[in-house]
Every structure is written in C-alpha cells, then in structure tokens.
Length: 504
Image (cartoon, rainbow, N blue to C red; front, side, top):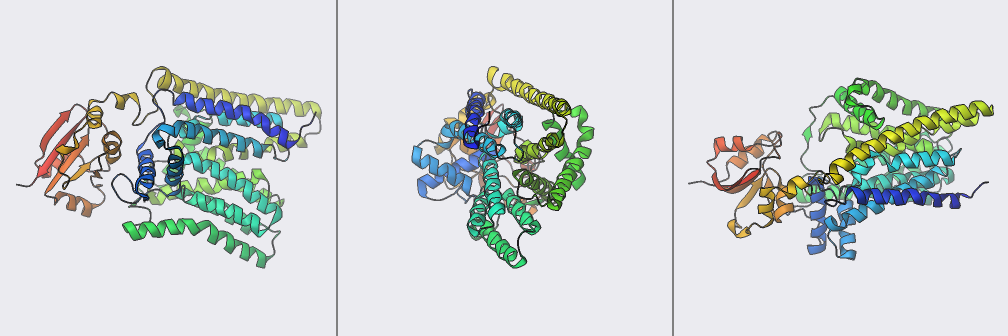
C-alpha cells in the first residue's frame, strides 16, 4: 500500500509529540535552563517591551549576539504578557516539535525515500542528547537550527525552478538567520557555493542571481553591524585572538563527533582521524553530486551545509577566541550530518538487484541504527536520573545549586539602597547579578585588554559583587584586585561577597 506525501507527513506528528514531551520532562524540575547568554537575550527582550530598545541589563545595546532572537522573544512576550524565563519551556518544546515535523517533511521527499529510514532518523533526532540539551535552554540555536531546515527547503525550490522569487525567499530566510546567529554566514556560503557550482544557469543569469542573493542575504546583518558600530564602536563586541591552533580545533571537532557516535573519552584518540574523514567525505560527496549534476537534492543541500558549517567553526575558532568547540556550537550540524552519512544507504539498497542481498544489507543497516539510537537513549536516561529524578535541574542559574546558594538567595532580597546609585558596581558575573537581584553591573576587565585593566585600577570609588564559585581565568580575579585596592567587606557568604572600594 502506498500513501501520498501529504498523508505520510502526519505520522511525523507522533515524533513531534514525543519531542515536545521530552523537553517538558527535562525542564520539569527547575524550568528552562538559563545560562549567561540566556540572560543577555531575556534582558534585551524585556528592554524591548519596556522602553522599545534592545539594551541588555547593563544599559548598552546587545552587541555580542545578533538582534533577531531577542526580538523574537520580545514579540512573544508582548503578545503573551509572560516573561521569557516563564514561557521558555513551552517555547522550546514547540520549536523542537517544529524541527521534528520539518525534518520528517523533508525526509518524505528524499529520492529514494523510505518510511523505515524516516522513522529511524526521526527517532535518532528525537533522542539526540545534543539537540535535547539545546532545546532545554533559552538559546538562539533553538531558532537557528529550524531556520537551517527552512533554508534547505527554500533553496531546493530555487534549484528546481531557478526563479527570482524562489531565490529571494531563500535569501530572506538566510538574512533572518544571519541576525539570529552570526554563524549563519554559513547558510549564505552554502547557497553561494551551490550557485557557483550550478551548471544549469547561463553565466549572465548566474552573476545576476549571485548578486541578488548576496545583497539580500547580508542586508540585515550589515544593518545590525552598522548599528552596533555606531552605538558601541564595535561590530560584534570585543574579540580576542585565538590561542587554539587549527590541529587542536580539528581534534575538538572530532571529539564531539565521537560523542555523537556513542564513543567514550577512551576512544578520543580517533577524534582527529574521524574529523578528517568526515570533512573529506562531505567534500567527496559534493564533488560526486556535482559530477552527476545532482546538486538540487535535499541530501546534497544537507551535505553542503555540513561541510561549510564544519569548516567555518574550525577555522573561526582558530582565528578568533570564543568558547571551545562543543556540542552547542556544533548542534546545527547534527541533523544535516546524520542525513549526509546515512542517506547514501538508500541509494545503495536501491542499486542492489538481488532481493535477499538487499534484505541482508538493509537489516544490518537497521541494526546499526538501532544500536546508535539505544546509545542515545541511555545517555538521555542518565541525564534524566541526574537532573530530574535527583532534583537538580538543568545546569545553570535555575539549578538546585543556585536555588540553595546563600549568596544567591541574599541577592534575591537585597536592599538596593545599600548601593550609592552614582557609584558603579563591578562583578565577575554581571549576568548572575542581574538574574538574581535585577541590579545592573559591569564585568571586571579581561586580563588580555591591558588598557581596560589599567583604567579599572584608576577608578576611585566602586562596589564589587564577587561569586567565589564562578572563577573565570580570563578575568582579573579578586586576588589581583586586592593586591592593588584595599577593599572594604560589606557582606560575606561562603559562596560570595560584596565589597566597596573608596579612595581615601
């Protein structure tokens, strides 16, 4: 019995329901996960609703991150009149369910397609530890990963029709992605690379389409960067040069792939070879599809994005200093890489003419995939026991460690009158100060920026809110400050303290 594609899409709803439930389950103890980035987003969203500006808690425009995700949160906040921290669980569960439905919709249109393959892939996506982590936090990746799939759908439509309308739709999606995550320049690069490789376009038309696509894609990003530069003097905030070489970043990339494959840290010696093989595999697959003139398949779009995004993360980490390559940074790769390295199995099975051989090969592939899914489930179950059953919550500012922190509880009820409003408050965790107390403060300077450190030590009067359990090696620490300044202790707890410095 065969079914129409529209009917087949309905079976995806079961995966959507399971995914929605899992996000709610992992957020059931302490709510949505809140990290420092989450606080930046929510404070900007609140500012948008309060005074119509996208300012963070320290009263400066949001610069380190693009503006669309806080706008997205702000619009939902305006409509619902509910704070992002409160509606975060339902929002992320809805976005995850939307991601699953979109994934199922795309897989129904693979050539060749297979319902068994689709069900296995959807199950792998539902139980992906990396994606479940992302969708239990207020992070912009929750929206960006969905935008990647929307772009794949839209750009394939363009590759089939080559109309300006289809091109503009794909470019507009890319434009909004670029102001959701700066890493979305990889979406622009994916489309640009395929435009260059497309041999069905005559040269003149190709040049025109590349110009239309390029200008449309970067329009919102350029506006965002110009706004940032005019208001803060920097396009994307202060950036330090990387201290991690290419070889190390390639290794870190490989360790994440090892984790996704179900390996343990004992197998990390395979990390670099796996990273090299994966990236070379994508290059070979893209070249093969170019040779066969099969650039317009969903599978090829997934392969191209995986290649461009993977190389971008490795190279950008080599030249610019930010958090070490981790599951969060590479999460947009999970679905597209999964498709890129499994969809070939459908072509292989189709090419086998002997029914018995095809059955044996298909069974082996299915068993391997079930083993992969089982490994995912076991990781998820261990996380459930640790974070839900044992009453800890998602690690971050809402977990039980912070809920039970004497210093955090003091900040929740602090009398703000203890601070002179004319005197600046500094801290080693300005997001935490805002989240617990609603007080605006400024981060102590990074050790790398010597001029900022010098200016800080020249300040004659300031307050200092210090968290003992959040030591950041990139910032000057309390011992450094005490060597230069004679701090007066105002309040002390085991996990933090409040100081004042006033030059005599």
